[in-house]
Length: 280
Image (cartoon, rainbow, N blue to C red; front, side, top):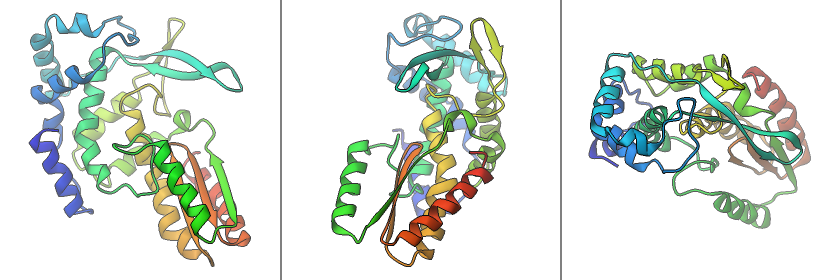
């Protein structure tokens, strides 16, 4: 991580309420874009333009300078993502993925590198999915210790239906603006969210959702659920419970553990209302 991005993370930890108003220059910085290019793996699925990492790299410096210029003058427009499917238990069609063009992957990674230090400073310990140095094994280990060592008798298991397809873009913008006060960053992310999906040669508008397969999507999904679920449980449901209460989330799957059944039932009832409020 560059010194400037490390400074952003340190600043975010020291001032958890700070709104960052000058971030966009980090995204179009050529050194940052080059680092993102180098970090992207080879031989991955290509987007609608068919360009591979090897082809993009043949005129790398020229391409990066041009990309930086487009970003700087807000002339960059992401191409539609290519719809692909991978096997999913219980589904004949499979899990939908959106494959970005290679240049769009560079920009997605540049945005992620810039924003991730800010959010890692404020994300709760209950969130484990798609985060640096955290895994499903860490989540399961802590869950096991909690069930074994704490006063837990009730467990509520939940999975949000079609979460990545139903994320509300207006709410996403509002959540991002709690920490991101640079309107150019918000505008860029909205362009990415609304870039469209191509399937069978036709482009479909994306008025909701954050496409699985996008490099930026895991971070955006964590931002959304940080405000919808993580803080809500910590600051409201856990405090209102008569007994002990604990919560664990990995992406859009999450568990709430309670000492008393009445607390679990109240949480389940409130959870449905909470999700509905945010379009889930």
